[in-house]
Length: 219
Image 1 (spheres, rainbow, N blue to C red):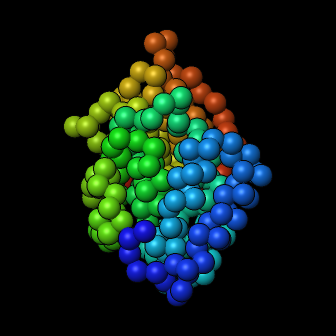
Image 2 (tube, rainbow, N blue to C red):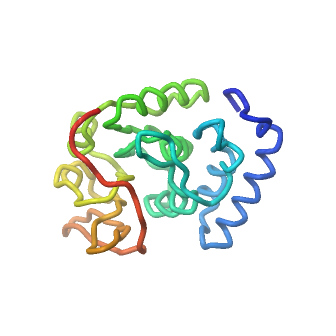
């Protein structure tokens, strides 16, 4: 595990991570690959030291600039939803945030391309990836609405902010690929799983969620 342990958590995080994994399993996360990725990813390195004692609670936490690190159950559910039988090839994530979701995906994919519209968050996440030796993650300070056209098509696309799914993301999804995103549905957001097939796009609703809004423009 790379990086400095926060507030002594480095000595205890293995046990607290294991308890988190058991909770996620009990809540319905059945893919052992996802549980193993969460077990091996130190979430306390992705939050501020002042709240690192809460890193292994199953709850979203603030990371600054009005953004959050997602609840571990939601991270696990979205990750499980994009996985097929084998290892993923290329994955696009819209909304790097702290970098935790990308770090999970990096253990399950050959390459992860992740965009973040807030430059401060993008730079911090990139530094974390470097310290942790996650060299298959590629970051970009960019408007997520555009996706990452030069690297398309993608085997999986994950959007970590809620709103209308941009047409550009549908276009950048490979045939057989899966897109998972929180979509506005009236007074709440609905997490949807969309698979691109030879016949078009097949949609499945996974449940109500709450994410920060998907916004245009850079900061």
